[in-house]
Image 1 (cartoon, rainbow, N blue to C red):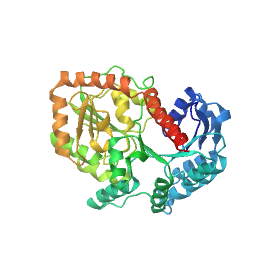
Image 2: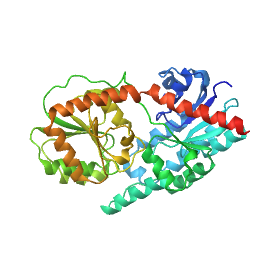
Image 3: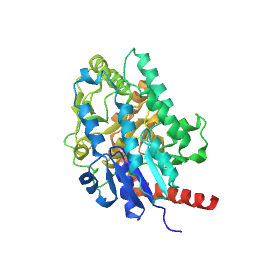
Length: 391
């Protein structure tokens, strides 16, 4: 029996292009459906002949994001864009693949269309179970009396249908797996394959000074737990120390930035991915205090640049970080735990450097995109074989 052929449907890019690239290397990519243009997929070496580009959806999404806040607060287009991509993608699925892989909230109709063509359906869910995600965020917003965006109610309803109708759900971490099992999912329907990092793009450059510097990369928001990190650094008042917040600032975090402002706080803004290694390399430690993530790829990026990591268990970092070897994993919402681990890194320079070296070895050995490709494709092959035997 030959390798299974796979149709990948991804709105935008996410890690779908990396998946498609890995499938292509092994002669398993039958079709890539994306809202990105073909010239973007060509950067990943994916030939145009296998690409179905639904560019109009990307144009609509980016156009909406450029509108002023006054317009964007009137209507939430999340469900509209999800449905539009899903309808178009379902119509563009070609016969010939054994497996259909679609991204969550964008794939209900795609799953149904693929099943009619005799394909095994896999839903790719990069985050926690959507009800867990919604509830933990709602809890945090209510804790601080903040009105902020939650997953669209119709998106939640749609994802629950996708979870029910997909043959399998692909997830990136043990933490995510636990949120699905708690909702009653059979472990046999869950495929777990941690993501990877491009070590040719993320590598260390020379640090320019001896300042102790904590790097956070990603949205500056409550979901990312930045308010707990700010509180920890504000209370520590470490000499010759900085916190670099790299990413876009959400409105709900502004009061916390004002409340916990200190001389070493640097708001760096948004950078292209190609520039991130320069920022990571000026750090001493990477810290991510998120309330929920599937598997935060910024952790792997920082480790590939030689940084040890402090992260919460809800980042998926527990599958990557070896406690005390290349970082620490702590509970969510715990500024005291953050302070304890930050002080350790601050006071133990040689140990911190050794942990950074171990972090780099860790990702190079086990968390490249090729390693991810081996993991996920082994799962696809196993599933295809099981399906054939049971037919």
